Image (cartoon, rainbow, N blue to C red; front, top):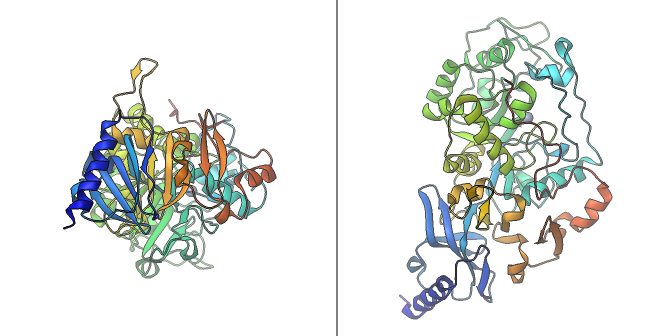
Length: 489
Ligand SMILES: [Zn+2]
C-alpha cells in the first residue's frame, strides 16, 4: 500500500473538514486528470453516509465510503469539498412523454374524468383536451431533456430522444457513455385502444395487442395499463393478467386476454387496479410507475401507494408530461408526499421517495446493474444538492433529512450534475470543473454554468431564443401554471 498517497488523501480530507461546513461545494484541489473525489454526505440504499466520499474515475464510480478505502488511487483527481451538501445518484424518470415539453399545462377546468379516453378523445361527454407540439419534435425533446437534466434527472424513459443530454433508456441510441444496450419497450397502448375502445367483461380492443410470448421476450416492458378510475380501466388489467378471461377472438383481430404480469413488466398509472389486482402484481414481481400529479389533475385521486409498498411492490416515480404532470422529479416527489398524506393519511419517508426516483427506477427500466445507486463499478451519474440553513418561515431548515434535501430540491439547489462523470451543470463556485463549451444561465437568484452546447449543437440560450416563450426549461421557483396536486374532495 502506498501510505504516502493515502496520507495525502487523509490530509486533504482533514483540511476540507476543518473548514466550516459550507452550504455549497468548493474545490480543494484541482487535479491534472478528469477524475473527481467528492467529499460530503453520500446517499446510499443503506442510508446517508456523513463525511464520506465518492471517487469517480474514467466516468465510473471507483470507490464509495470511507476515504481510507481509496488506497493509492486519486492522487491526480480534483477534490471537491461538499461537506454541507448531499451527493446522490442522478434521478431516473420512468414515465415521460418528452416531446410534449414545449406545451403548457392544461388549464384546470374543474373537470375530473374517469378514464383516459374521456380527456384524450372527449368520450362520454367529457371535454377533449387538445395537445400539439410547439416547435419541432426534436427541439421539444431536447428542451424537455434539458429541463429534467437541470433538475437532477440524468435518465428518462420518455418515448422520444435526442442524442446526448439525458440518457434515454427506451432507445439503444440514446443511452450515452457506453452503457450496455438492452431493449426497454415503452408502450402507451398495450391493448391497442388508441382509438378509444373501452371494454367491460371482454377484451375486444384493437388488433395486435401485446401478448405473453412477446412480453416475455423483452428485457423490460413498461406499459400504460388501467389509466382511469372506472371498471373499464380495471378491465384492462384483467385482460393482461388472466389468459382465460376472454378466449373468443374479436372480428378484425385481437380480443383475447393474455397474462403478461411478470418481473420484467412495469405498469404505468395502474389507477384502476383493485387491492386484489395489486396482490397479483406483488406475487408476480411486476413493478409500478407512479405519477401522482397527473393522476390527481386528471382523475382527482391517485394510488394508495402504502398498500403497494407493504405488499412488496417496487414503485418508481415518473412525471408523465407537462400538460397534466410535474415539470421536474422534485415537484413529483413533493406531490407524492402531499397526496399520500392528504388522501390516505400516510407519511412517506423522504428516503422511500428518493428510492422511487433512483434505485427503484433503475429496476423498473432494467438498468440496476449500471445506474440508480452510488456503487463501485456503476456509471457516474451523480447530482450534488446544496445544503440549507436558517429558517424557512416557521421551519428550521438547517436540520433537514439528507434524502429530503435531494428529492425535494429545487433547480436552484443543484450544484453539480455529472452524466458518466462529465459535468453538464456546475455552480459558479466550482466553475473550474466546467469543460467544453459552457455558458452562464440565471436560475432565479443563482447562476449556473451549463455545459451542454457540444451535445445540443447550439448554446442553451440559442435554443431558448428560437423557441420563443414556450414553457421554460429553467424553473427556479414553483413551475408556472403547475397542474394541481390537490385531490378531489
Ligand atoms: Zn403517460
